[in-house]
Length: 541
Image 1 (cartoon, rainbow, N blue to C red):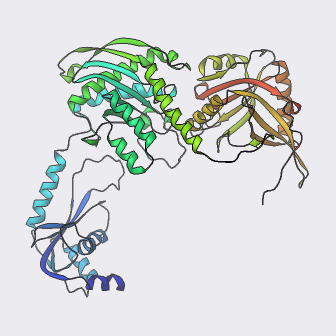
Image 2: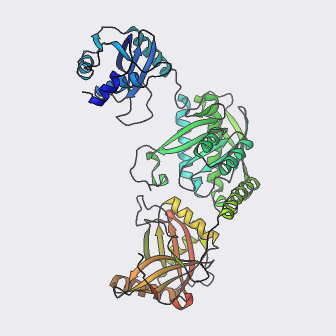
Image 3: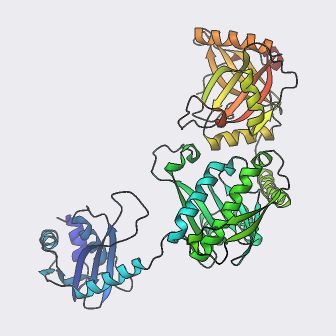
């Protein structure tokens, strides 16, 4: 039954001399979702006298009769244009169960209800809807599905986003199929979205980046996004996860779904490729995969250098392409990367110049925002052979000039977080000039009579960051401190600071070598070197 207030509201609507038809039928919509509750049935209410659709909804197949009533109420109060709000004199349906349900709901609205065996107007509308759906092309031409997905899998394993920022552009020269050069931007270093953008023109790439820096409103950003001229490959998970901090890169390829599409100022976003688009994308991605596999060591270095290689791409015979093979030239564009980086840096400087804040004086300030929230911290040690491996495998390495390889290994602080947060921390350290030292400074809670070791990281710009508070009465911590002090003396006064990813993956709490992104060999100093003295815990009211 309708509530009294809803019934009174509907009774106030003008009642027009017309007959409305209503029905609910399945539509064979190609689903992009594996969810069982994905909408698959269409509820339709039309004005048979005027021949117009008043309201339409897509609902899940297991939704009750209430869905048809909700759509009917919208047809009365908020119909599609050009119809106006009104009540019909009569409603006809071909579903007897729906008819009985409506008789109970629409009491006191003075609407006649009747059963008819056929609804010719609705039949015609549904035929039109179904034919429109059937002509929708598949996401990829059938013969391209396997080659493109295989290529996407190879690039996922290459993980170029681990060493390429989105401003470090790579040119893929085809000179065929209407494409002279793709300008490739790799997404994923920040851990937000993973994918490959293949811009069809350098002008479009520069214009988009300038627009993003210039505009701030959601509407302006959306307009800039839709005005790009590129083909794309993006990655998403096949299943939904509740963990917001889940990094997609922690998933195996079997859990990843590649998605291809097109962006163009006149077409907007299209989540499928035509055959004439699929073939240049396949050739370009295969060449990019070979380039990354061959040169990833060079690309992982801090300096984005000039590199160029040429590849012969064999096209699968089932594609029936106009050529069997194509010569593709792939090259880095360091000058363009510098230009785009400077563009972003200047924007950040301008924003900083607009900040009119007050700063603290020169007194020591202990901050707590270097180590990301929900990170896993471990005070331990690593053997010397692992030290040598990390010196050559991590993306960011800071060498200790006087490090001595004596004793069982090097004491280390390991911070494990998600990839995007790890990248952000590494960037902050790089901007500060590196890490200078680690110290355990004494601290006390005068109200509880407790003494602490305060773990402090000092950066090269002299900023101090708290990474942990350890009770001096804890026997486990005393043992760790004793081992740290001994191993550090044997290593020439050094310790290690490791930043790792994978806090939400299978290696949570036990990062592997491939999870370790940064390794800093730094001095382990005494509290006297920092000169902070005894720090007290002050309650904040």
